[in-house]
Image: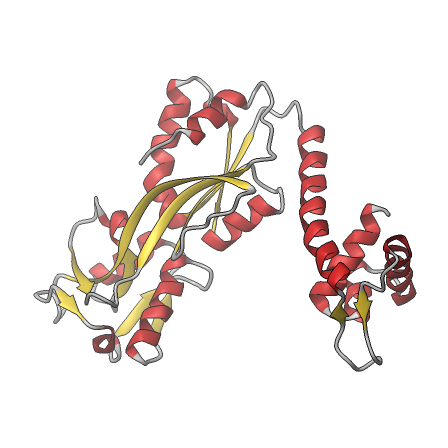
Length: 293
């Protein structure tokens, strides 16, 4: 059994197609078939059953177990490969989402500065979904992100930073500037400024729209949270934002959603438990593991 055979097997399970799997790895279809055959012979089990070429691929009980174990093993191998190759790195690759990063990154940089290790930080601005994905793929060492549901995965060291409410923001001259609370349904006829898909506030806006039974009328997709807020200040639509990100923002009006329709964002900092910091990274990783909002 080799690593490549397991890679082929896992991708085949995920795509459900020999052709798609072969295309993904830029190999021939018989290459994929031979890999599955080697695994099948080793475990004395077909692993994957397909009645005919047009039927769906089905996993045997052994195949299901192999897939679950192989995913974990391949992730660990990838982590080991990276950590060993970069054992002398004098960098900590930190991915952060715009919403969470704007709140915490200045304080993190300050702590690194006070410890005399600012040069260790190699920061990357990402969408929340991409920040955690980068962590799972081994592309970053630490991720700071926000999401609607707190992630709880035993393979990661995860520290909860804060929970914050999602609120509607308007300009001070907006017709709703005297309203303190609304229902999701009342948002139906309003125009929105929003972030692109993959950003927490966009996903939450679409969730609120479902609660109010409407499709949000997004008139402009802002590239940054600051731009979204600045447009709202100018009465170019309204927006959904994390309340914690508005602490130092003036000239906007905040409206809360009715109880039962409120959405919450959970800010977390995470790193792989399998990640072993080298002697250059230890002080910085210790700062991040004990960082508090």
